[in-house]
Every structure is written in structure tokens, then in C-alpha cells.
Amino acid sequence: MTLKKLLLLGCVCLSLAACGGVDPNSPLGKRQAAFKEMLKVSEDLGGMLRGRIVYDEAGFIAGAAQLERLSHEPWQHFPQVRDDERSKANPEVWERHEQFQKMARDLEQATAALVQATTAPPLRRTELEPAMQAVEDSCEACHKAFRAY
Image (cartoon, rainbow, N blue to C red; front, top):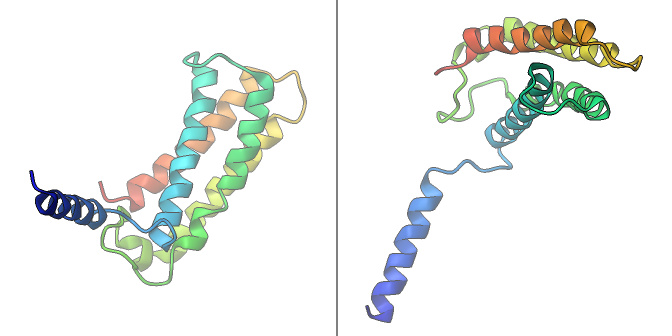
């Protein structure tokens, strides 16, 4: 292949790679990053309680605190009007914004309760499991109402 063809092929590949990406500094990019991090932390905590991951009390306490902190982040990146058609959020996020915000506060309260359940080591699964289930239920309820699958 000639140098000219290689350069042209490289430019085409770079152009195609840039087409589908989301700007990480955009509101959509920031909320997607926050949700992905929340999912990872939540899956790790649930995995510890369900035996998929080795249970580590200190790790669980740190993870619960991290999840509680993260639970406050994505909502600030939802502008008053829909900002990006690539969003997986249902348009009702903006049409029923008050309900959406209420569900966001419900998640924040559930993660705060999870942190509260970690304040008196040694931790007991009988206290952690319902608190973690409340977090998962809160996420699921909002996804059912507002996420476009």
C-alpha cells in the first residue's frame, strides 16, 4: 500500500471512531460516567453479599460510602431540556421531571441508609442485605419509569 492510501485509511478510521462517541465533558457523558461507576460499586457490594465476590468488611464499608457519594452526582447533569438524542433516558425524564427528582432523592436516601447500616462493625448480613436491596430496588424503579431500553 502506498503512503497516501495508508493515510487516507487512517483518516477514515479516525473519523468513524469519532462518530459514535459521547463527549465525556458533556452532560450526557458526565451522567453516563457517574451511572457506570455507581453500577460497578453496586455490583461489587451485591456480589459480596451474594457470595460472588469475597466478602471484605472494610471494602464493603468503603464501597457503601462511595455509592452514597456517587448517588448525588448524576442528577446535576440532567439539564432542564433534553440535551442529546443519544441518551438512553426516556423523554419522560424531562416531561415528569418532578417525579424523576423524587426518585433521585429516594436513591440518595437508600444509599444513606446503607451507609448507616455500616456504622457499627462487626457488620451483620441481616442488616446489610435489606439496605442493599432497597438501593437496588430504587435503581430498578427509576430504570423502569425513565430508561429507554
